[in-house]
View 1 (cartoon, rainbow, N blue to C red):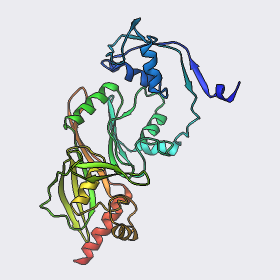
View 2 (view 1 turned 90 degrees about the vertical axis):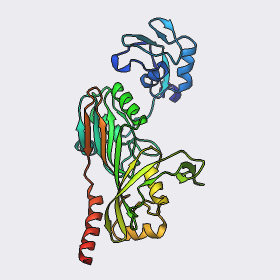
View 3 (view 1 turned 45 degrees about the horizontal axis):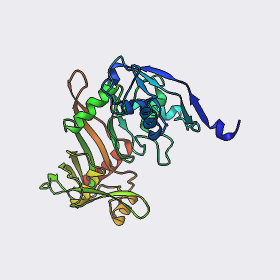
Length: 325
């Protein structure tokens, strides 16, 4: 057998029954989940050729599935991926210990700073891969939303597709409230309670993606509230109404108060001073979530404590402020 043949795996015909959790899902999305790693072009081709059948009938990619439908998945040849680096038991334990809420439909994790929510871009694994590795019997675990790698705090994970649809719909309709705590440079003006500047994503010459305030950007709104003043810094609560990339970081910078430790949006001198004073991380933390639970609709408010590095910075600033009195 040649290396090329050894790197490919051919699977036989499968017949999959659609359960209640997948009811209403488009056929193409259902197949993408069933055939992870298979290019979309191949999936659309086998649908177009009639090799995919639902209840023995030909279907289109946008066909909505019903509970009890039988989906015929034809033989597919896929490339065998090299064995991925598995998260170790220590990191699995850390992530399981970071769970602050869980029921049969979802869980919420207080994500540590420095861990991405998913693997990719040179990372072997992220939060979701760690949880899947720690729970090999879990049929479904998917991120409801995302946090930047360097931001800590609350992340919602759905344990059922129906819960994922519900929570993402709640996000779209702005019925889930997120509150972040950020340590920013300078004395925040209490008159600045909202920043409503459009944000545009762009690419640096080195390929790095960033965001700037730009009239051509998407409408964005962040509500701000000052919580405490320190020497040279302020602790603020930032509540994003929209959910743009780097929204809080760029809106804080636009207001003249970049987030401490932000190597993308803080000027070099301020960043160097923060590092010299012992700052080790981006000082942005997803502190609280307010939402209604899937199925029951019961209201929930969750809060996540700061990690040690975040708390140490605040403690140092507080002691300096007390000594100044």
